[in-house]
Amino acid sequence: MGKVEAILDAATSLFAKKGFDQTTVSEIAGKAGVANGTIIYHFKSKENLLYVMSWFTLNSLHKRTRMEVAGASSGLEGVDLYVRAFYGYLGEQPDQLLIYLQNSAVSARHADPLLLSNLQALRTRYLEMLTELVREGLDDGSIAPFETGGPEDVALGIQASLFGAAWMVLCHHQELKPLLRESLAAAYMRLAAEVRGAAT
Image (cartoon, rainbow, N blue to C red; front, side):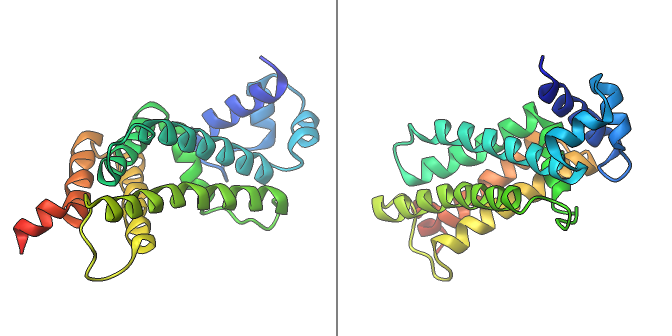
């Protein structure tokens, strides 16, 4: 394992266990088996390290989700697979997702603007993937037209519910499977043409 990988692994473990603010560069260096200066050389600051880790986490989630939804036969099925991919990642990589969620509470004042820009661009692409699935569902008829809001609003609402569920699992120790079931039920009630037709 190279030094950068060792640093990322050590930081993942410590940030998830102790939190970002309570973890020092010295602790990360000690766990990674490198000098403090090595971390500064590669990442410039602890904040930059967190943003790099967040980018890798979201990039991994984005790639996994894109692979999962590629075989969808309808827009609605694609949304279903998007939700399942998120929960699958949450179940397999809880520490990485916890650190990503912690990132939102950390000041960006000391982070590299390019890192911030790249992370925001990736966040946008991850949301746009879901928005496009909703649009496909409207086009193919698997998703009923909305009385209020558009595809962007609906996608944002679904994504917000996913990250909220992740917070409940990771910080409040709620069980994952019931939240997955409820997330899918809520999505189908909001989107599915046949379900919404039966409810009216």
